[in-house]
Each structure stands twice: as C-alpha cells, then as structure tokens.
Image 1 (cartoon, rainbow over the protein chains, first blue to last red):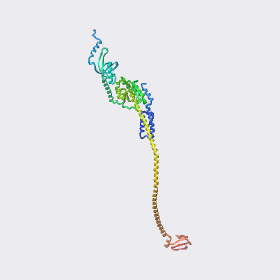
Image 2: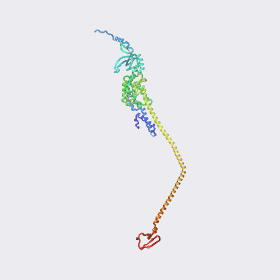
Image 3: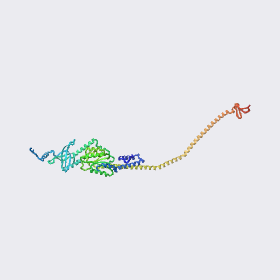
Image 4: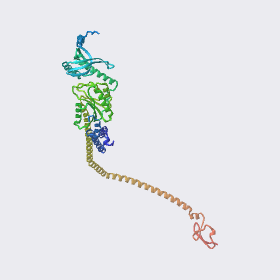
Length: 70
Length: 432
C-alpha cells in the first residue's frame, strides 16, 4: 500500500484510492486510522489529478520524436 | 502490279459509322466497372469488365458523359450513393455507341442507375463483414479494454488535413485542462493508396504499441470524400486485430464503412473523435472530484460524530456521578434506619445464646463435682484400706527408730531405742 507515489500508474493510484474510500465508508474506520486514510487518499487524488492535467515532459518528448508533423 | 481499287480511310470509317446505327447498340443498359474517370467539363472514362476470379480485364470500352448530362447524373448519383461518381465502381449505365471518323469508337452514357452501384457497394461491404465474422475477428478491437484515461494517442490522418487540425485544436483547447499526447502517423486518406498507406501507419504504431493508449483514424469531411476505399477486407482485418483500441472518424452523417463495424469506437467527424477522448478524461476527473468530496465528507462526518459522542459522554459523566452518590446516600439512610432494629434483634439472640451457655456451664459444673466426689470417695476408701492404723487394727505393729520405720532388723544395733506402735498405745524398748 505504501508504494512510492511517483511510481504509481494512474490505474494503480485510482484503484488504491477507491479501496481506501470504501474502507473509510465501512464500519472498520475509526478516528484512529481516519487521519492516515485521509492523508493517503488526498495524496493519491493529487497524483491522479496531476497525471490528467499536468504535462509529462518526458512522455511528450518521446512521442514528439515519432510525430511525423515535426 | 495493278493497284487495287481503294477508298479513303475517312470513307471507310464512314462505312463503319453507317453500320453502327443498329437499334441493338442504341440506348442499351450495360453493367460495367469504371476506371480512369476524368472530368473536364465532359466526363471521360473507361468501362471495364473483369474476370471475377482472376481480376483480368476481359472487355474494355472508352465512354463519355457529355457535360450537361453529367451535371445532372453525377448530382443524382451522389444523392443516392453518398459517393461521387468515381473509379472502381460497379455501374449500370445506359449507353449508345458513338463512332467518330476522327476519334474512333466510344460509348455515350445517357443515364446511370445509382441504385445498382449502391447495391453493389452494400453487397461488397456485407461480404467483407461476413468474412470478418466467419473468421471470428470482427469484434476483437471492440473487446479491447480501454485504459482508464486515454491520453497517449496515435493519429492516422493526412498531414495538413483540415480534419486533423480540428482534432488537434479540440484536444488542445479542452475546457478541463486535460493533457493529451499525440503523434501523427500520416497516411493517404483517399484514392488507391489509402489501404496500403493506412496499413503502413498501423504497422508503425504497432511497433511502438507500449507508447500509446489508442489509435485515432480521421480525415476531413467535405462532399468530395470517397469512402469506398475504406471498404476493404485487409484494412478492416488489420484494424479489427490491432492491439490498441481504435477510434474511426472518417465518415459523415450517412456513410458507414466496414471500418465502422470493426473499430472499438466510431464517430462521425474528427472533432467528435476528440470529444470522445475528452469525455473519457472528463469522466475520470469527475470521478476524482467525487472521491475527493467523499473523502472530505467522510472525514468530516467522523470528526463530528466523534465530537458528538464526546459531548454526550462529558454531559453524562456528572449526571452519572450524581446518580451514584444519591444511590449511596439512600442505601446509607436505609441502613441507618434499620440499625436499631438489627441491634435489638441481635441482643435478643445473643441473650438467648448466653442463657443457653449458662445452663450448659451449670450442668457441666454439677457433673464435674459429682465425678470429683466419687473419685475422692474412692481414694478415701483406698487410703483407709492402706493406712497403718488399719494394719495395726489387724494385729500388726509398727517399729520406729529415730522416727523412721524399721523394716530390717539388721539396721538396729544394741542400745538403740525403738518405739513399737499397736492398735492402741505404744511401748519403748532398748535393743539388746
């Protein structure tokens, strides 16, 4: 679960996120693990969002090399 | 050598022309395939018949559609088939032979039956679809799973095509700030080169498969499109079996090609292809927002319910304490009020016990005294029996010397004074 955030793929991150939210919604969640869950899920949310909306320069460069328009 | 009688070529051609007035070559409906279609006011083309097995041409004729006829026929053809009148089409045309002494023989097309062409195109499409079905590959691309958010997109399009520009603009200016990464694999999107060129682009993408999430095949719209080229078995089979999901956006409103049946997703225009990709990203963002709201609200609910619990507990503690004290006080009171009663009954009980004990002691003492009396009497009897007086009574005497009883005569010596005691009285004697 504590996999390095930067190494997560979008699918992995969103899968873990869904899992945590499910745990948070279940009866298992106590005030003791609430803050851990919340912190981790907010990190994962950030990772997911940045993958969608922030430019991955490395990827951009690799694909630009294949692009025949350039 | 005598010269045979000869006529001029023009005259001979005139004879041919006269032969061609037979009604059987006038306004006759003919099935043929088009080739070399050129429009220069008038439409010039070749009509062919091919061997259906070998594809070899077995009949050929030049043909023309005069400009004013062509204007009408081509419009009607486009209306019915959705395609411009073009090469490689099966056509049913009404022709008359025309022979010109100078230009030779050609067929003049007076009418075209576009339903025939439409039927042929549909039949060809159906044949291809049935073959793809029979081979079990028609749904393969549709069955591929889409990545959560397709962001890395391989685009097959003609370089500089309007449709490609529309697609890129749409992606770039999406209102959600989604990032897409595209690479163009340019291909010829109409004419004979379409199939090999698109397949080549697919192969290039296939070689870099891991870099992409999906493929988009697009081309600009417009009425001059010629979708016929996409109704091709080899191309369809390539798309169907491609390892990445393919979006096809090459048709327009009414037109459907075989590719539309095999691609994972079909859209009408390049813009719609971009919108499809954007909507997938937007859905993912919406889901993220939902999750984010869920996390926040769950955390908040937990905090507030814990606070509520705490408040409840802190309000109940003093009350509980008060309850406990009150109960203790009542208990004490009850105990105190019961105390005299308890004491009295206890005293009575103890008194009774004491009385019983006194009685028992008395009885014991009496018993003990009786026993001692008996013992004393028995001792007295024994003493009586053993006393020297009793022995003296029976006729024995007791001799003392210096106050001590003499039991051995050898203890005495001459001159000792001894006293002899009898039942009554005593005498003193001197030993001799």
